[in-house]
Image 1 (tube, rainbow, N blue to C red):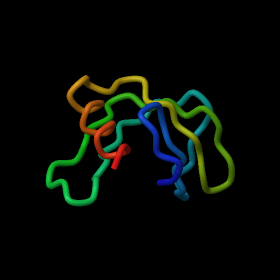
Image 2: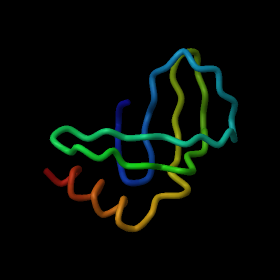
Image 3: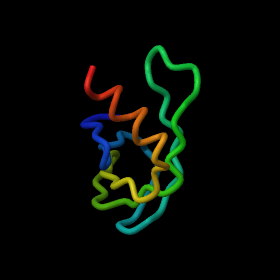
Image 4: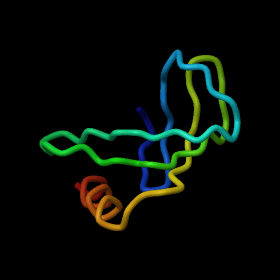
Amino acid sequence: MHDLSVNGCLIVSPTQVKHGDSLSLWLSLPHDAVPILIEGAEVRWPEKERFGVCFQTLQPHEQLRLTHYLRR
């Protein structure tokens, strides 16, 4: 995972996805025992072995946890 923000990220994976696919993701943050669940991540652009997703469904408490992590 690269270019992480509260709105989305770049994922490097051999998984085949198409534009508009919806994914659920578990995001494990360093020094945090409980991963963040992103129930709705929409594929915005797919390329060979990487794709960009936009977080569509991120619970407010999960968004707060991610925001605190990104501000470090």
